[in-house]
Amino acid sequence: MPDQHHDFLAPSHERAERRTWAVIALCLTMMVAEIAGGWLFGSLALIADGLHMSTHAGALLLAALAYRYARRHAADPRFSFGTGKFGDLAGFTSAIVLAMVALLIGYEAIQRLFTPVPIRFSEAIPIACLGLAVNLASVWLLGGGHDHHGHAHDHHHDHDHDHDHDHTGHDHHHAGKAHGDTTGRDNNMRAAVVHVFADAATSVLVIAGLFLARAFGWQWLDPVVGIVGAAVIASWAWGLVRDTGAILLDMNPDPALADGLRATIEAGGDRLSDFHLWRLGPGHLGAIFAVHTAEPRDCTYYRRRLAGFSELSHLTVEVHRQDAADRRRTVINP
Image (cartoon, rainbow, N blue to C red; front, side):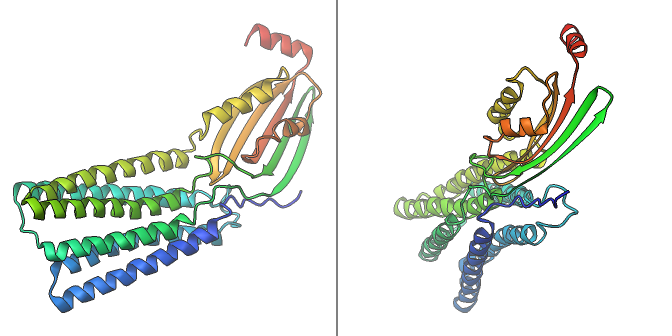
């Protein structure tokens, strides 16, 4: 039996890891500069923004470590289906952190709405603009990490066993060249981008709110903008939790594809008695089929029929052969 390899990482995995480390370095540099500047010039706003940048860098560090761990343990036999889901696990964790940040922003904003705090516009506006510039640079750096094309590798092994008149075959086929959208999405990179994008969007809202508050004396606008920003961040966090949670729980990642697979198998008059489809990593899907047929068909036949579904990176087919009497009984008593 040939060796099995379960490398279900995206082809852009290492490039995305490098870009994430680059953004972390940028955030840490900005953090040190802001905290040092705030301490030297006595600006509490600068120190506060520097500490905020540290939480930002911490979330990105989680993404970078997930990339590194998944890459280093891709061939570890303890992981039955590879380490492709580490990115989804990191994305789920980042989404929880993002939701907590949204709650804290919302809580602080509501407090300030009822208990206004004097705003030092001369310091707050430049800091918000500088933060926006850093976030836009981070989005640009991370944007190059998006690549949802599959990692091609092809190897399979067949096992056929005869037991009386019921013949069962098993086939494991790897042909990972995914072209889906949600199935090929790198949720680890998505979480990192959402973090910096949320910061950038918040910065835009804050800058607009500060200018309007200074121009018209609308001090209440600053906390209102904070509430809106918290709502936007919470919405993005929920989207991440929903999508990554579904992957971690092995939900069907593509119902339309599942229907196509089922129709392809049953097109020749066979019956599909068991079918599972789940995501193994960005651009890689796994599937298990149990097929009942009265024809002299083996695993190779079904593998050929499913060859057009390039999203399947790990395929297991179990073939049960029935004689004519068995088939009649199946039809009468489904």
